[in-house]
Image (cartoon, rainbow, N blue to C red; front, side):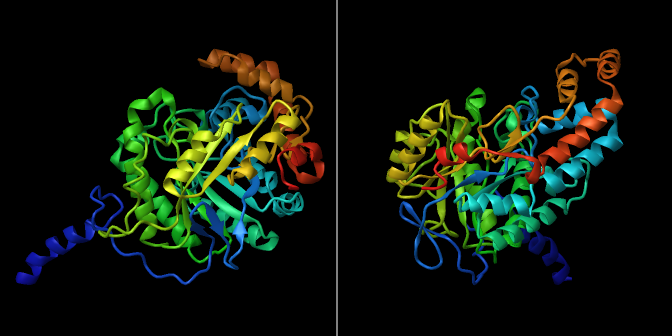
Length: 426
């Protein structure tokens, strides 16, 4: 009978080690994994052969997390774009479009081309729904994200490109804007179930990647907590620690990137540089935590340099670009190199007339009719029917199919001057 009484106690103790635990003072020790990967060394990243790695690369934006402006739509999130397509051509045709989109938008040929530009790294923005079983981009397969991630890892091995894995969209919303596919608020930081889910997903990703030297880093949360939700700023540091400690239960080796609040801009006052990430209940710092910053419309990087120097950890500009001129971009890229801030430019591929990307997708015939539908009032069924009739379902299906064809690398415009301006050849 005594053994029976012990069972609830054993179960309770087991739960204490789960990702949902708030008290991080006694975390389990990381499981030993023998893998040589990129390591943090002060301000630098060191490759397995002992040489310094200066990150220069590009984002695979829009592929696994659609954003409105990269289709010439308004400021729309992934679920809003999906809903619009379903209203226009129906669920079945929308599911077909998304599957074709995933299979064609980024391929091994794209990765080979990226490598040929002089880039050494790609950043992969992910939506957590790819790993959750929720309906997303035409599927609800919870293993789909891992299959795609495995595909990208193999491409990186073949081309020699390092991979930064970026949680662009976390459960509940990590920024509270369209970029995180949320509903306009960063509920991640106020929901225990969302916190546990993001930790669980990261643990699955880290367990898959723990023996992959080509994986450079895990970027835990993209552009966390916009200034519209600044009351949540105090929740960011605990969230980053919690995810990091969860990852360390399966992968003690790979670098982890913490982003700044307000679109990866604010670090001072958000993080405590004297606290850091502790291993278990000791006072030893996690040796492979670094930081990720973003900057658009300005080359002001002095606060990032100061924080890098204060913490003695690398700072990587994992998003920048869309500069006003090629000369501005060249100067900014040079400034980052002079200050030892590696970078991955946003973004690799998007529809014309944009040319601030490595490649441009030529806009298919009648795409403007889809854009007109997307921008039309669709508050009720009468609105939807009227807007759909103006576009025409057959016209829309053809334009969507043509978009897929045009998005293949062989049919894209390659923007050599842009690639030179963002420092890939340097």
